Amino acid sequence: MDHHWDTAPVLYDVIGHDGRVEVCNRTQSELLGYGDRDLVGASIEQIYTTRSAETLRDLVARCPADGASQDMVLQMRHRDGSLLDVTANTGSVSTEGRESGLCTVKTRLGGVFQRLHQLERDNEVLRGFVQPARDACWCIEFFEPVDLTAPEDEVIRQMFENQCSWRLCNDAMARLYEYPSGVEFNEQDVREVFRRNTENEDFVRILLDARFNIDGAPSLDYLYDGTEIHAENDVRGQIENGHLLRMWGNVRDLSGHKRKEKELSDRLDAMRDILSAAPDPILVLREDGVLEAANPAFEWCFGWPVDSQLGRDISAIVRGDKPVAAMVSDMRLASSAADSALQVTCANGSVRTCDARIAALGNEGNDMRAVMTLRVRTDPVNGGAHDAI
Image (cartoon, rainbow, N blue to C red; front, side, top):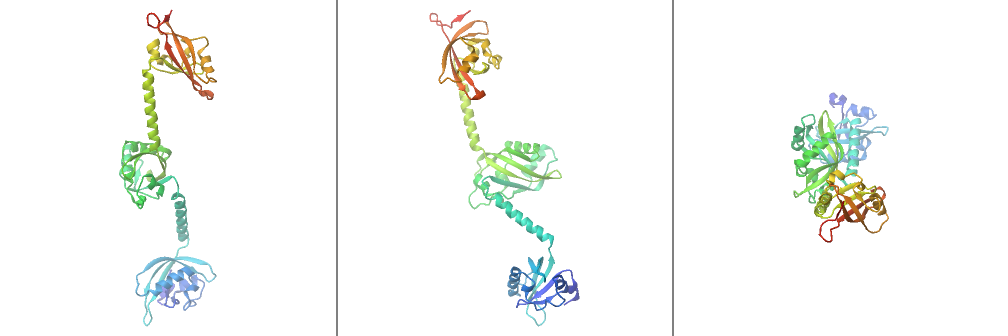
């Protein structure tokens, strides 16, 4: 053996077709605890673990037909039984008068290999948590980090234009955005789901204000077929030197909630329209007799602007056999609406007699409310409203 190989700072050997060591440099022999020539002729199982020896025997069997060099990780066995992790480059080699054998040149991995192994295990554990999760989990990695020190408009532009990709998105993401079976979500364009629109520009502003640490941030996303969906995101981000490298989180579809919200809003608008058109004054009162709401007929009939009486005790202008607050309180235990006659003092000082119906709006704890409907009595002779001065 060339003396340079013999003392080189690498582990070197040549393995013959019989699975025995034909050449071994001094560096390898001494590191494994053997003398200068002790390993020549030894079976490779003596210095390699079973799995590594099987790999090497397979490579030897294919020499020289497959003479291309290969890189791999192997495990060697010290004379005292301890193990040594090495990275190896292998290739076929032949010497005069001998069959081709397998040459291996190796270097110790030490802490690098342990770190790599730990990262592989951590990645496996992380995927084990994320992949089967019911919640849609996502991560966007920016190949062009977003400069968060730039003006807001420029940051928003970069968020939607800088090169990026999905990373570690789980199957729940594909289901949420209705991607067909067999389509790998992580390979899709981020902009197909997360497009630039007014809602998503506002979403980015929210993230900026929260420094990419927020729950429940709204966005407007797109399904596989282009249908819009309202989404809610819990977001975290990795920021280094003022640049966003990646952001990740969970996402929930709020489209159903948005439809329900719109339906309730439409119903509320319709109810307000009905109440606004009602000819009879309708009042919402707290248990202490304070006016919380009233329809426009309150002003039409009595001349009082609604806003002038909101938050005030209505007893100042509405009187009956008992105080208004007592009538409202009586409804806490009532099983039906109660009727009574009341006098309402108008803004011009006149008094109108009204038939009143009062019913409980809620009777749970401090949420007690009552609705009072007033109908102004008319003069049976003249057909007009009856005023008592």
